[in-house]
Image (cartoon, rainbow, N blue to C red):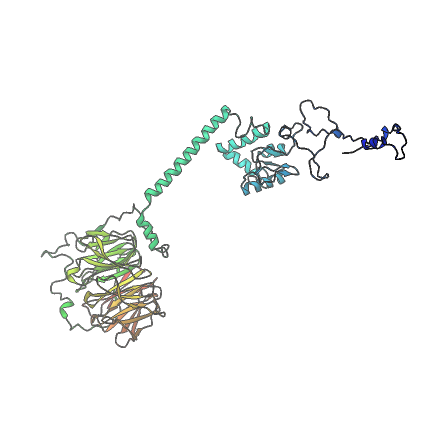
Length: 616
């Protein structure tokens, strides 16, 4: 406040009324009114200016406003009505009345900052669209920028147009847009034409008839999509097969190399058989079946320990042809060898006459993929075939009837019957799921599982009169098992070992041989400790990569094997020296060789050229 002195003060008036000390009479005071100071404050009007319909005249000297230059202190206490008075006047072009959070930055040089939740990719899309075409779609769906360019481009963004301009838009127009795209485009155009009036556009706009019809169409399409998705999900649930899921788990490393897995709808092929002999020749005039050996034939078992001498064959005496693809395995009829059974890669099994006309006698058809292995029962009246179609079929040799079809959804690499004559209803399967399974043909179910290998099991071999058996696998391990006990009694594993695809038991049953993938055949003891005999190693052939089966002469003096280049090798068992080598088969390996049980120098061989050769 400013003070102005205009006259004497009251104190001075009192002093003027006193006389002197020398007794002089008092005299009236002089006119000193102009010397008394007077204090007066200027009037202050600090009410805020409120711009109404008709603003009242306001003088600048009547306001004391908030100012940063003045120290930032307001010099009066305004009322609440003054602070909450509405504002009038031109609207700020960038200011919004959106609610701001307590800690948000409401004040900005361009107005208030309104928070909005926008996906980063959407923001980048509109950002580059604005820089490229001069317009963009804001968070409310309105058009910001050059609206003529928006109409010209048809509302496209940088992600929906090509470098050539509207080529992609023309292609889309030719194909036709769906209802949802049309609705979004129409909404954007309407907002552009109507501006940002909340009563005309936006989520709170008034519903129009065409909008309601379009909304119903969109809802119907959304419901159709939802129902289709629910139906697809339910279909997957209904089609889920826990067994198929287990198959994928068990074969997770080699599944791409194995045949197609079974599903709930997989069914075995219909098993059929065709007899190729003359009509009525299935039984001779004495009523004997065609699988019976000739009268007077003496089996190998009747010779006892005094087995006939054997010799190395010299040439091919006959060729069996009839398989349309390669032949994977061959087996002589047990004890007599008057019939020869063959497993073909064409999915068929054939049995051939070996003594008389040497023609095919019967064909067994029941597999849809290559047959991996076949094996006779002890009497030869039945045999079992295992195929890459993941089925095993138990056949009647004489009638050609498929007695039973078995599967556990795994690939059976080899099946062998128990050597005991009283257990011919039991066989063991080497499987692709790293296990061995024992099956009972009377029930058609598995009765025992042997699970200690880490990869697919390739072969199984009975020793010690069926009390023990040997299994080999791609995990380069050899396991020795007690029959019926699921825990191996011995591991044979060494860092220098290779995988063993096939094995064979010596006729004396004191040793067994293993075809190693290092182009060697190793020999192990077949009783007690199952120790490897390192001095007995057979070399010279090239079998790496092929499961070539070995064979022994009935007297145990010679051993024979094919190799991956189609040759046939013969070794002396005692000295391990190579005696003879033949060129056996073309276009692939000599995959199997079998020595005749009675004829001293007769050997059969087969290969992937589809030919079975008889050597003598």
